[in-house]
Image (tube, rainbow over all chains, first blue to last red; front, side, top):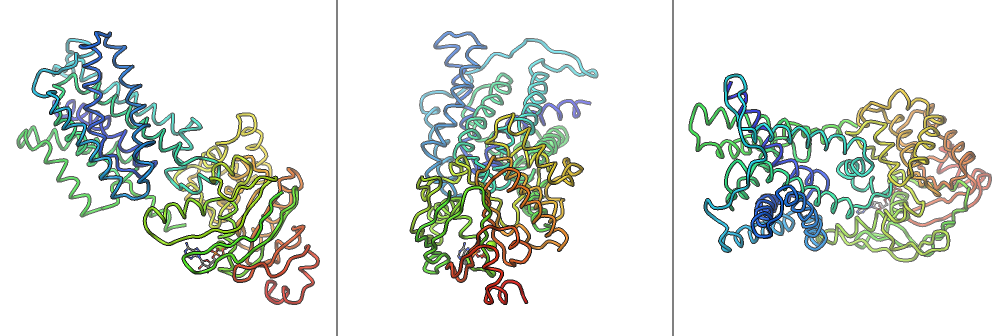
Amino acid sequence: MDILIYGIINSFSLALMAIGFTLVYGISRIPNFAHGALYVITGFLVWSLVHLLKLNYVVSIILALLIMGLVGAAIYRFVLIRVRGMATSEIIATYALGLAVLEFLRWGGFKGMTYTLPVFIEGSIVIGGIPVDLQRVIVIAIGIVVVTFMWLFTHFNKIGLALRGMAQDEHAAMMLGIDSDRMAVIAMAMGSMLAGIAAITLLPLGNIVVEAGYNVLILSIAVCIVGGLGSWVGAILAAFMIGFLQIITVAYIQSHFHMVVALLVIIATLILKPSGLFGRQKELEERV
Amino acid sequence: MLEIKNLMVFYENAIAINNINMKCQAEKVTGIFGANSAGKSTLMYTISGIILDVKKKEEMKGGERITVLGNITFEGMDITWMKPSERAKKGIVLCPERRRIFAESSALENLKIGGYLATKVQAKKTLEYVFSIFPALVKLKGREGGFLSGGEQQMLAIGRALMAQPKMLLLDEPLLGLSPLMEAMLARAIRNINQQTRIAILISEQYARPILPIIHHGYILENGGAVLEGNSRELMENPDVKSAYFGL
Ligand SMILES: Nc1ncnc2c1ncn2[C@@H]1O[C@H](COP(=O)(O)OP(=O)(O)O)[C@@H](O)[C@H]1O
Ligand SMILES: [Mg+2]
C-alpha cells in the first residue's frame, strides 16, 4: 500500500519535473539543460518575494511564474536563437547557463537548510491506513491539472495545435504560416513556467537547495529518454515507470539508490530501445 | 500575381534552378512539367521560402552552401528574402511533395493546424468546403495522418493547405505515386477548387497527361531551366512535349 501511494506521488512529481523539458524538446528539439536551474531559480524567487519583499505567498507564486515565463522567452530570444539547430551548441549554451546560475546562487550563499517554502495546506490525511501529508496530495492534484491542461491545450487550442504541428514537421508547419521562432519562444516560456510550477509544488516538501537543480535535470532527461524523446504520452508513462521503480528500490534495497535508478534506466533504454517507449515517429515515417 | 525574374538556385556548385523567368496569373492554374530532378521541388521551396530556412540551417551546421539569386515578386512586393511564415500570411501556401502530413495527429487535427492563419469563421467555412470537395475525408477525421493511404493523405494535404486561406496554392507533384483513378479524381478536384474559389494554383508534375487539360498556362522545365512555355493546347501539340511528357 505504501508503495502504491508513494509510487503515485513520486510518479506525479517526476511528471511535473519533466513535462516542461519534454515540451521544449518535443517542439523545438532543444535539449534545455538549464531546466533544473529554472526549477531552483523559481524556488529562490518565491522565497525572496515572500521574505524580502514581504509579499503574500499566492501573489509571490503568480509573480514568480510570470517572471519565469519571461526568463524562458528571453533565454530563447537572446541565447538559443543564435545556436538553433546546432545540437551541441544548444546543450553547451543551456548547460552553461544553468551551471552559471546554480553556482552563482551557491556562491551567493543560498545553501544549507535555511531556505524553505511553506506548504500550501498544513496537515495530513490517512489513505488506506497510511498518513499522507496534504502537500503530497496536492502534488497529485496539480500533476493531474497540469497534464490535463496540457492535453486540452495541445488538442483544442490554436497555438497548442500549431506547437504540435511544429513538433512533427517544422517545414510543413512553416508552409502553413506557423513561425518557428515564435513557437520556440512560446515553448520555452511555457517550459520555464512548468519548471516553476513543479518547483512551487515540490519544494515545500523539502529545502530549496542548489543540488535540486542537478537532480531535476537528470530526472527530466531520464523521463524524456525513456518516454521516447519528445513524446508526451511516453513521458508520462515513463514518469510512472521510473517513479515506481524508485519507490520500490527505496523500499526493498536502499534509499540512496534513488538517483541511481534514474541513471540505470537511461542507460538501459539507450542500449535496449534507443527510441524509447513511444519513439514511434520514425516507424511511422518508414511505413508511409 | 507571382513573377519570377532571373532566378538561380545552387546547391554548392551544382545548379538546380537555371535562370528561370515565369509568371503566374491571378485566378489561373499554371503548370510546371519536368522529369525527375528537373528542379520542380527546388522551385516550389524557393517560392514558398522554405529554401531560406534550409539554407540558414545548413549554414548553422556548416553543411552545404545554398545560393539563391534573382527575385520573386508577389502582388507587386519583392518577397525573395521573406520568411516562409510571412509568405504564407501573404497568401502563398505550399502543399509539398510527398505531402508531409502530420503523422501523429488525426486528419481533423491536421486540418485544424492548417487553419492557424484563419479566423474562426474562415476555418469553419473552409473546413466545410474541404469536406465537400473531398467527402472521403469525413469518415477519416479521427484517423491518424500516418495511417492514411497515399491518396487520402494527398486529399488531406490539399485540404490542410486550403485551411491556411491561400491566394496562391502551390502543389508539388500532388499525383505522385497514386492510382490512375485517384489521379483523375484529384485533377478534377484541383480544377474545381480553382473554379469555385478563384485561388491561383501553381502545380508541378512529372507526367503532364492528367494535369495538362486543367492548366491555363504551363512551363516545361529541363535541368533547372524553363525550355518551353505555352497554354494547354500549345503544349499538348508540341511534338517534343508529346514524346517526353506523354510517353506517346
Ligand atoms: N538538398 C539538396 N542538396 C543538393 N542537391 C539537391 C538538393 N535538393 C535537390 N538537389 C538537386 O537539385 C536538382 C533538382 O532537384 P529537385 O528540385 O528535387 O527536382 P524535382 O523536384 O524536379 O525532382 C537535382 O539535381 C537534385 O539532385
Ligand atoms: Mg520534386
